Length: 104
Image (cartoon, rainbow, N blue to C red; front, side):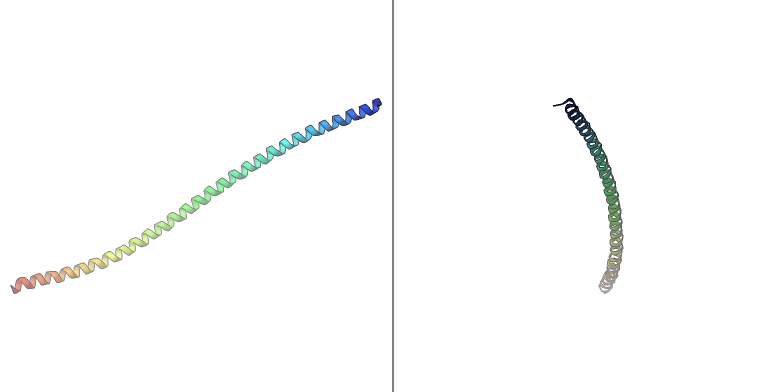
C-alpha cells in the first residue's frame, strides 16, 4: 500500500471518528431537549389536572350547597305543616278537656 492510500484511510478514519463523536453529542443534546420538553409537558399536565380538580370541587361544593338549601326549605315547609296539624289537634284536645270538665 502506498503512503497516499494509508493517509487517505487514516483521514477517512479520523473523519468517521469525528462524525461519530459529533453524532453522539447531537444525540445527547436531543435526549436532553426531549427530556426537558417531556418534563415541561408533565408539569403543564399536572397544573391542568390540579386546575380541573379545583374547578370540579368548586362545582361539587356549589351543587351540595344548593341541595342543602333546597332540603332546608322543604324541611321548613314540612315543619310548618306539622306545626299547623299539631296546633289544630291541640285546640281540639283542649276543647274536649273543657267539655269533659264542664259536663262532669
